[in-house]
Image (cartoon, rainbow, N blue to C red; front, side, top):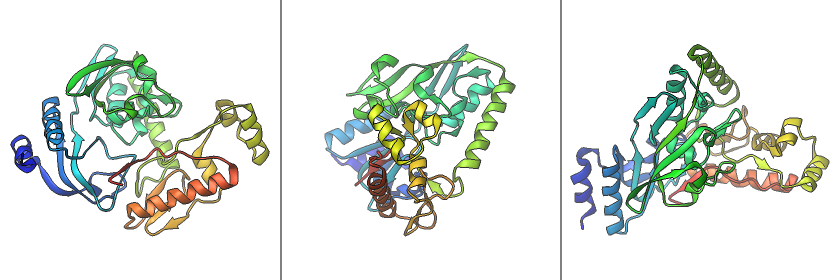
Length: 320
């Protein structure tokens, strides 16, 4: 089977060869994908996956390009961008395709007078990625108003209920499977559109004030650290004063720990830890994936050495 010819039959001029992934990631970093396609319906997705299976070709599926770091050498396989972007609202039920931007769905539902996803206006990625990683901020998480998810599994479209997904902090069973999210169904609550849009704008302003939006970034690089038990809480309390909100939630901000380790502004090559928010590494000037990976290694080592805390990455490595 000639993979080039088979992909051309499906995508025609939409098939891109040696496509620079730096064009498709929030980091603006990443070498060439040998084959790059954007799928606009389930049948296209099934077809390209059938081709990669028959030819034993590596495949990587993504949505918005946030929370991912692509190797400078690229990806020697097929990269699939989920470009299914339908949004349907019926009363208090919302169904969004996996390729819908989380920020777009937040604004659409706010305008419709539906409360529950306004917080998601500050998320950088798509609904598919948000479901997989149980994305959250401002006290909200994607699981909070979720009813069910449609996924593609072994060529079949199946529906998974919320309780099937084993949600945790930035975790779900999907994240550790080969399932591909196709769409998500939410139940929201009716509220005043003007009130919701005002709240949405306030959250956007908070994001602008607290996060580095003027340079390429994958968003938060590390998960906040979850305190396991009372003994660990006491141990950490002997090292530094834990803010009351972190003590109460048993979760310490990774950005706060990085700031405590005096790493804000630390730079390797063109990559730098933001001086505005410690949990952001920004592409300040022609950064490479290697520069970012080196900084992440330094952060993990220094935070662990100083505080006995092992930070876990949120970013997904591609082609490494």
